[in-house]
View 1 (cartoon, one colour):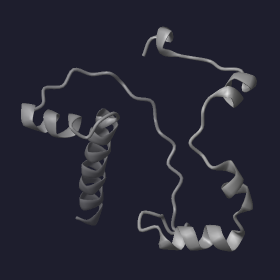
View 2 (spheres, rainbow, N blue to C red):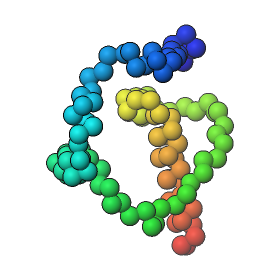
View 3 (tube, one colour):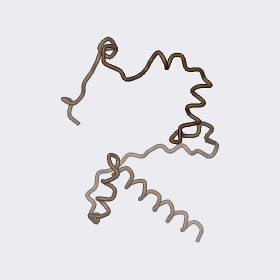
View 4 (cartoon, one colour):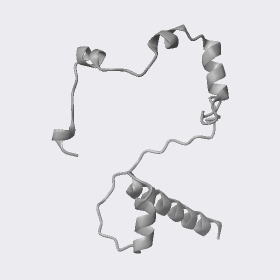
Length: 106
């Protein structure tokens, strides 16, 4: 991304931009209205997630490499959009973890 694509606005300029949000209706919503809207939304994520088994993962630094990959594999990951290289790395990391765990059990 080049700097020519970056646009900055002052708070006053942002306030003057048109909005599709019905702010008056939004300000009158009660907690119960919001809870019902979330409950009725099929795409809403559950808000009572259990994080007790969550693990902190601190990413390690990455190294740029040249890698030969089958074209269909590359296109599969590219088709998923931005971040496809990160997803490829995640797949490789899971494979690595599986192999390491398999060795430990042997």
